[in-house]
Length: 494
Image 1 (cartoon, one colour):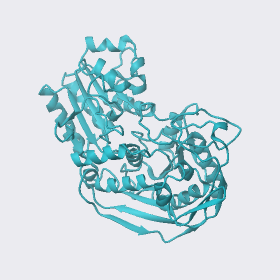
Image 2: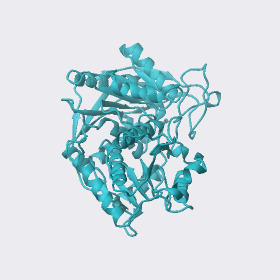
Image 3: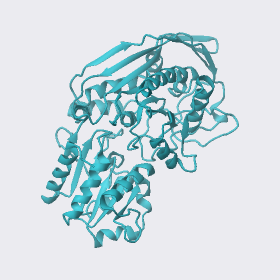
Image 4: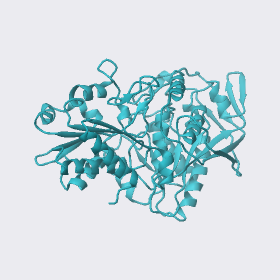
């Protein structure tokens, strides 16, 4: 397979750094650029140069670990499963603390090359400020590995802690990457698609609380005042129907030329995922594959969807960072995770260029203030500098009148949030999902926020859609000004 220019440049840069006695190499490459292939080819080149003996890889999810194992196997023409004769193994970060001494003894006997995918999950400049995964890396790998490469598409953490193995400028606090390949370059090189964001809003919202009624002219107005939790918006069937109507129409249009183009719907909980599937089936006559941690073989379902021509897949956190399904071109963001890191990683699922004639990429989302701000920042591509963002009013208006009675006491039900996300993922704010069915209580994860005991939410106005067409991009960096902005945002409770 022919390497892209950036991949060849990154490989040559890494080898040069290693030969100059620099053990650790940090690569920032935009989601969808091809980090897996680059790191696998680099590992093989180091082996051919007699610089390493074995390769170990760590990633944030089992599906990504499988993909890395497969890519390494293809390069080395050998198995990567840790058995006798293997050239190494591919693990998840969750498994770091469960590895036995037989693995760690490899570092004493062999020159081990370690690949860290999505390294931003691992925090710590030292043991004192490290999270669990970062601590394991600092204690057992940092000094004992022959060389390491750390990969990321989002070079910061929501809690502002330093990323393990990364260097920061003392004065500006800017992360110092050894190689940077930003979204601007990826679009220029025809490596990534240009994302377009369609924002769903409503011009007349009524909240009834007992004898009192409150009216709001937009989701931005409603959510900015914290009247209701955001989870009540993304689980409202009117919102689901209107958002999906737009997304499905766009996907149908793309599939007239790209027959296998697919769509991803990101839900906020397992029960929410099944609620969305029910709405799609009953209202639109559409089928959708639901993939959650409740399934017996979720990775097999994802792999099957990757290569078939099915239209829609619904998940919570299993199809986020690093999951490679290039045929995805449309995404409905109905998650109640409102961190910029997660938003960008989800957006990255629809950015991978394929050989198809149509390379459009659309993300549909409710008009939550934070998400709209992230859309602006994607256009600016972090940090400073203005990009061209075009707002286009959608010509088709959808009218709905749905009342949802949310009178259940939250103590009568359990909620389940983010069961599929890595336990080290930072989540801020109120993460609340009312159970859809009263028959099946589920476990509770996340943080409960304030909930009104009883209210009615009416969407009686016209739904509006605004389209942000992103025309220009800047390099991924973290300037002092941007770090200050991120720190201010992180201090705000969502």
